[in-house]
Length: 393
Image: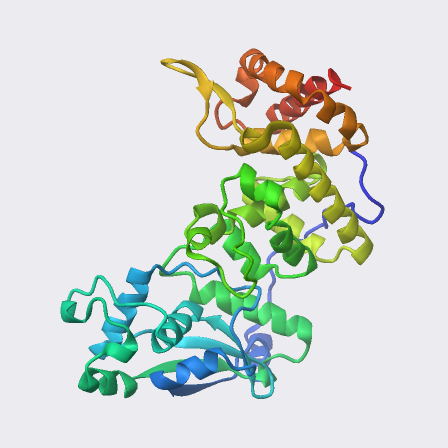
């Protein structure tokens, strides 16, 4: 695999010997305030949340936040809890500049309240107040409306002076986000990655996840043309809302160095690769972006919506798997990325290729079937696809 100049990542030698400190040294560390977070608390009336969400003072969607995942029913449940004055968890803010804040945790709560006050959805699925189902905020009975306006949402603010440097601030935010999200709704590996390893490569993967060929090949609804809004069909797509689409981009980049870098699980490998890849130069990131776009577009031009489907054997006979699979995506993308100079010839012969690929999967089904992801199995898949595409060059 030929890498771009500056793309190669090396494993660091880690000293795994236990760190031994005396009680006096530990007390000194605590006294000097190392890893000590400075906070304050605040309360916000619900009828001020909309202006807060739309304000430039509050950054509502920092890169480490999850994508919006709440359904209308879940938003309604929150509003019903607030109507009844049920205590809800506080939101967490980080003061990244004096009097300017990022939402570290609580984005869904804030946007649900804001959307309700902006009359953007009707209540549904209420169990204690079913009489209010179908009503927007402006249509609530006056007394109920006034009651809601009296409610507050609490916040815990990590103050600016907690971190001395920008690097320390990033590490702090990542640590806090990970810990406050250790309970409740379980984060996917890519959501954790997005939180803990934000940086230039992570943001590139997010941007490239909008590639139309990728979205169409993986059944992700396309953007609706409004960059300020995620339309509901796209927001409810499983890959999109769990950031699985972003992980697909990351997998493509990491796969290029898999043989030399992967130790242990795929999850830990992708963590390591993203952490190190965030330090790639602008030139390397530009080369990777061009490579991904060219490769995914070629894959879609050759095989269309079924680019990454596996032709598999069932009890009733052979047939296409009903959804794309990474067992095909990873080696196919890797193989095509090394044959982009032959794009025109491959596209010219795509009809032959689509006819031949069914027999290809039948002949090599043992290499793609199952969950075998050890090094030799992955190398065999690479070899099979290399041989397949070379037949049409």
